[in-house]
Length: 447
Image 1 (tube, rainbow, N blue to C red):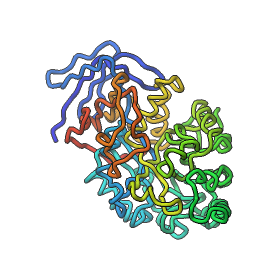
Image 2 (cartoon, rainbow, N blue to C red; image 1 turned 30 degrees about the vertical axis):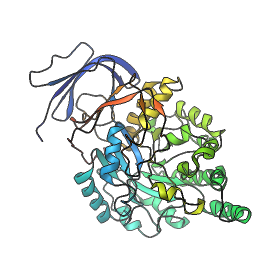
Image 3 (cartoon, rainbow, N blue to C red; image 1 turned 135 degrees about the vertical axis):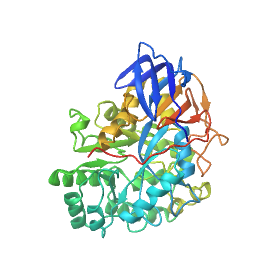
Image 4 (cartoon, rainbow, N blue to C red; image 1 turned 90 degrees about the vertical axis):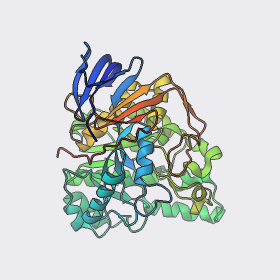
């Protein structure tokens, strides 16, 4: 595809804690000029008048499940990355619990090849840990792979890592960022046994956060932090859900200096256990959405920088699967198409600034993972960009959902903002709809 240059005029540029009116130029896939004094477009440029629109870096989602290979009846890299594109997500990091599992360098590279062939946005894939693949983990290329994922709680296949000696070795020997799903499997099994005693197989959805409770999360997260401190490991704890866990992280250390970082997901900032009554298994996820006391504490920790990144843990399942009884209904919900709009709704409501949203969804993932030349509006950086119309209402409906599973827990919700245009490496891939132009790259890391 031939390169097209663009000059974006009169946009509200949201970047590095500030919002200013300015212009931005794209050439050869990169940002070549940013100015608040005006840019003279070249005769070959496509000029976009962005008056009244917000221009921000593309969202970087550090935790998604796109289900390919092995579970493509639920989702695949093409369908879910297109939904990500529509939502302003220009880069994702995808998880290894697929089939076959991404637990070897060979399988990792096979997924990277699928990403290049089918993804609509930039990509990286985690190498998954098991109780038996330490040799593979040692081989990871730290420059072109986002990290190693450890399930310290339930997962598919044999990806639960519960051997203490193996965990100790992984934290000691793996040469890159380790991302963890933290829930105590012992605690969860105990709570499940107790719940089944009273309810049998007819367990109400409302009991999900009782089975997978605060203590299960805290026991595992605090243990991961203990291991990381013991071995000076670069640890990133995914999807924090409780006030108790939020208290484990400091708020007085710059992100670039942290060895232990954290993530909170949009559904844990938005829903509470009260929502199980209406949404049931549609919001069943691991770790569970907890009772209402946790939501304000998560918000507080996000705003005071104890929680570093906002992500989705996008994890689609079919409607039919979700309608099963509790023990057969899988955990996870589809969110990547609407995460930015959902957070901008909280901007509209005054809960968070638009600059803070950009910090947590764009800048912080780039810092945390040491991503090369992405996550900011900076000259020389890749032109991964999103133009948002903050005054163009959008309602989530069956007709505009792009997830392969064809449903969302946000159906019927109206947002005040819409995603107007999305650039991926300087290519205009979304212009209120898919343009047919794709230009994804495997992201690289400055490690």
